[in-house]
Structures are given as C-alpha cells and as structure tokens.
Amino acid sequence: MVKRLDCLRLLASWMDEHMLTATSLSANYREWNAVWKNGANFYALNLGMCLPFAVGLSLAFPRRKVIALDSDGSLLLDTSSLVTAAAVNPGNLVAIVFDNGVYGRMGATATAHAADLEKIAQGAGIKSTATIRTLEEFERRVKAAMDGAELAFFVVKVEPGKERVDFDHRLTHGRAMKEAFVDAVRRHPDYRANEKKSS
Image (cartoon, rainbow, N blue to C red; front, side, top):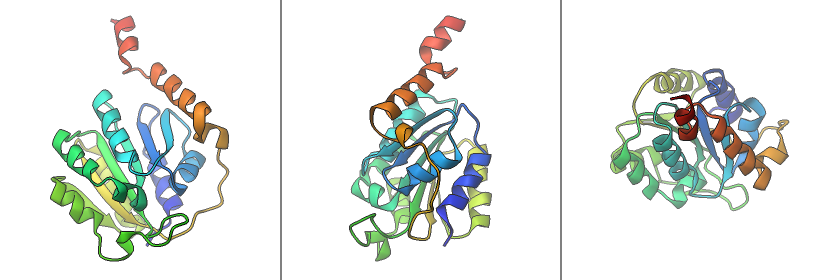
C-alpha cells in the first residue's frame, strides 16, 4: 500500500494549468487542494458522481487531460459510470481510484472483501487498467497515461486514514468552490466562447 498524499504530490508534478480535475467527497479533495490549486478543479463530488462528472469534462475539453480522483466508496455507488466511460472512450481521461477499503464513517467497503474495481472496469470495456500498490508503479503507469492518448483507469491501494494538510476549505465546498470552478472554466483557452473571440 502507498500513501495517497505521496501519489498526489507526484501527480501534481506532472500537471499543467490547463488540465482539469474532479475529486470525490473523501480525503482526496483536501489532499489534492493542498498540493494543486491551479486551473479548474471541482472538489468533493457526492458519492457516485466523480467519474461521470469527469467523463463530461473530458468530452467538453477533448484537447486537455482530465483527471478523476475518485475513491472506492464513491465509485462502488455507481459502477455503471464505468460502462459509460468505456462507451464514449475519451482518450484524454485518466481515472484514479484511491482504494483504502473503508468508508469515512461507515466501516469497510466491498473492496475490503471480494470486490475488484479493476476487474469491474475491464468487464465494462476499459482496456487500459491497473491495480497499483507501490509509489514506483504509480509513477511508471500514471505518468505514461498522462503522456498518452488513451482512456486509463487505475486502482491505487492506499493506507486508510488521512494526512493533516493545509487546504483552502472555502474553495473546496459549496457555492464559493463552484463559482471558482466556473470562473476557471470560463478563462480556459479551450472554452468555446474564448475560442470564438480569438477566431
């Protein structure tokens, strides 16, 4: 198992300001905000919403990388989103599921028993998948996906618990977060209104 924060720090080192991210309502959003604040980031999507939201972003911004930072408890609530992702097959989407085998307050998730999210993704039709257990493997596989042009799905086995981090609570929840996200999208060079102005 690895620490989620170590993985996120590596991921942030490969990002640029025009990539877009979505995170689930889990420790993901706190730790991601602590290491990456540039560009358009939608934080703390309710259970089951992270991957479908990221699929939508990837279709709206096909020339940019979109990163879904999901969690096992969230994705298990809507595994049908894997079918949707495979069907539309956005080559700019990298989905990373941090799997610690527990909900925040409700005990073990199904992945602590027999459920295998990578196999479920494969069954849905996603071709590029992996289950990652070391930081070296995260660096090798996820960096390659960031540089590639294929829908990629990774399950990262992480230690339970969350790190103490300094994050901007105001910009990770509610109306302020949504307004900041919309503002960032409107400033994005690929936003259609901006493309029309420059043409």
